[in-house]
Length: 255
Image (tube, rainbow, N blue to C red):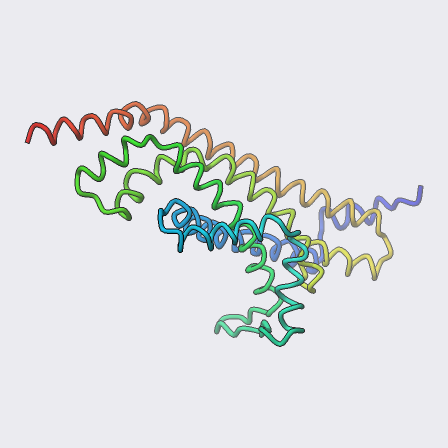
């Protein structure tokens, strides 16, 4: 077996600048796209819960489209097909401190749009898990819908959302490899660039697999910490929250 341990240990323990840049860009794209997906998912979930069909049906179409087409197709379509059709072209964006290339913009937006469809269903399920008495009590106290969501519903729903949210970010880290097809120099494309110069394919792809395994493992520890923290707070707060509706109604009757 033609395996070079020297190359393997060199790139695993002393990665080159290309590797470090790819690792950094992978994390930046994953975090940025996940934040975008969470924002879109929250907006889509609230629109989906609305009784207005003008808000419901566009969201249903968005979720159906994003979940029904491959993510790789979405990435290529957003960056390549739109430009080829003369509809929209991603240009480099000068942000003052640095220039954000167009392909990185497309990568973040494509991954974020796709993630938003999945987060919409996760957040909608989390909101649906909150007892309906919480809504009625908040309305009885004169809370507006935004305040009701911010102060009562979303904090309780977040405990349900955390586990699938963590799993989605784990998937997002691995999905960043797909944006290499539009020339984004994340970890996989950085590895391909090094292999084209060294011809040590087996060793370097083993290294990149270990890097991704390390990233997902570290995130797994952080996710378990989050779940334990919110699980403890849930244990202390769930019982009072269940009584919130009845206590509020008693106060209102006593006025």
